[in-house]
Length: 503
Image 1: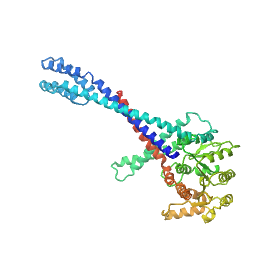
Image 2: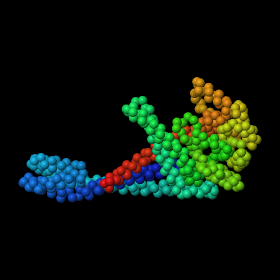
Image 3: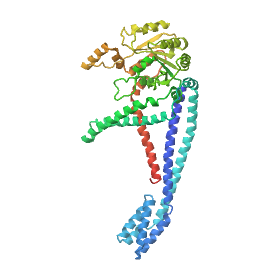
Image 4: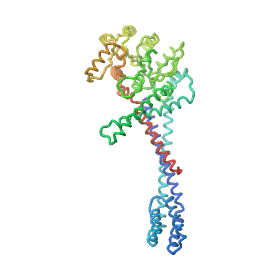
């Protein structure tokens, strides 16, 4: 129900934003039409004066030539594109060329033309004003349920927000807005650099060789600058757990792990071109199918790690808060490790939480973990047997209602081609030589795929779990595209607004 409420709230919000944008665009159009009508208000008087000046010029009054020119200039600057402006301009040209009789023929019925154009401007103003008012009323009408739905979503996580926000470190009010602005610059440069490099590499591109040669280094420079900016600004603009919960509104996914594993989770998987998103960010992106992912941060860390939104607990009183977070979360994802605090969390999750709520990640092949885990569970996982004694194997473990474990190995999708050739053989030898390479060689989307299968085995199904992890590697590109599009739309409105004031 919460997921449906969130989806409906987001839909209403998006429709309200689009409606407000259209209403603003139509309001500028209505203001432009109103300004054009007001500028053309004196047209009947000006048309009569122009006709009279032309008659005087036909009778030999040379001084009327200046009045003809002034009348032409007024219609050129104040009349809408149409018959009256064209007739006055042509008549002025004929008069200056000495074709006075032809000029008088051109402005025959000028008063009637002006009257028709004024009536047309009145209709344009009425039409655009009515449309702008209708869209503005629709935007306001949608804003009310959008705000109500937002408040209702937030009320559903009020209790857990109170828990995670109790010990939140205080930050200057300006910090996040400033670094979010810098983030926007980075995402824009990322999108621009990516498309510049891709455009230059197209074989059938109608572009000179010099332009292509110039486009590649410019695109690479933009990508490099974007990566540097984003690596510096993203941790400083990251949401805390309370902010993430309020923004999402769903019950969270609690991610528990040993602090010693944070450095490994902060690394970036190979395989995604120009990716800056860590394994934990990809894992959090996959688990976002259930809800916002929160984790307890290391108390002394100067900046929060990217991925799960951090909350911070005191050294001497963290256990009651973790127990309460377990009870308030819809899913507990626990990465197996060696710390004693982590094993206490496993014991408490086993003793206090429903079986289907717990997901265990055995990602590092740590020695002794399988035996210690089997000692805590009513039914053994036999993880060592499932992995065939391979110390580098990774697995995902879930439990059914009877605490029967379901173990799913982490690996490529069924039917994926095995890499061949000299490079592949060297990688296999490296895999056998060092376990550190194995961690790098297991992409996070493989973990997400195994997690999807493990959860499905106990009746928990999320179709988007696997592809969300892969999509998380392209977040910078999508955010950059969205930013550029939004800035383009806002820039168009600003341009029209400046035109309205004659700037």
